[in-house]
Image (cartoon, rainbow, N blue to C red; front, side, top):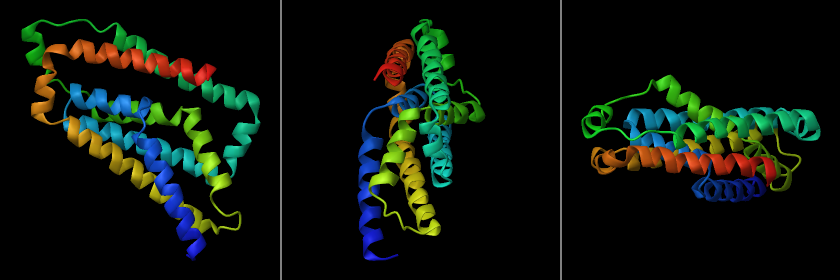
Length: 208
């Protein structure tokens, strides 16, 4: 890898990290599952998001990203599917009911299946068209057009690892026993606030 590609890789990695840190549906999902469930659940959510990124990267590297963007009905299908999923999660969170103190203690040990946590993270990212557009713009503007396929794959691996490490870090920080214990009494509010955020993000996907 020559100096041009190294410089480009560092630039791409820096921009991706800034975008990951910025709050969005992925962050909201990891935060919710970290505070409401166990560290394992949080990690599986983070892993699902990372695999979602990997799906975007795969079809972009295969040249299908531009096809999706150029095919209006296909892009709209992805856009509305992503918005509908976030809307569903948002409404579900907003309708969360307050539980009794006894139920809260019992629920604090409640766990959702690892596959469900993974699926939530995966669909939240994979159905987000803004993620596709962001990655497309990176590959179109910052990566040299003559970049070999193997080098492009290396870019993809770096972006995947950045995503996994960042959201794994968020999951680790927010899923500690002490941290979760502080929020036991307001679990329904965590659900509701996250629901409002996800609902707002679903509207943003469609109209902005």
